[in-house]
Figure 1 (cartoon, rainbow, N blue to C red):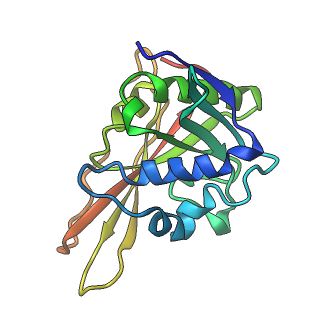
Figure 2 (figure 1 turned 90 degrees about the horizontal axis):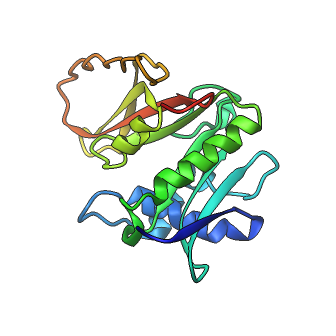
Length: 208
């Protein structure tokens, strides 16, 4: 069992949180986007720009030597400056990243639970996040109470830049005796699908 502790994120952690945005964006094996490329994306940059705003809250996992291993934080977004996981004004979006060496060792789950507790204490009823189809972290999110809210499909055609097609699906709190709703299959557009991104929400009143 890996030995680590969790501390609150501070204003001096901005650079490390940016690193974690890059780690999260590069989840797919064999595909690595350079840090400048990831952070040039306005949505990715929005997750850490101006850290730490008054409503920002986060935590950093550190090893016994105090070296940062991963981080999770939440941020509120306005409807006219929404991020990938936006569902409503007043619902914080959770962002999480863990160094590859420390993945699948309980670090991400511990960070999520710490952040969920903090969101509950701050008076929030829900958290939201965004995850791409096939990301190994989907299992973690579902077991921590997140359910699909909607699906966005990113397509490419005629050499154009990716276009997001947002499809709504049901959302529900996953808990004991509560079945997770299934998303209906999105209608086919006849165009090649390059990527699929799902938006998940969770109530923070309790964990399954």
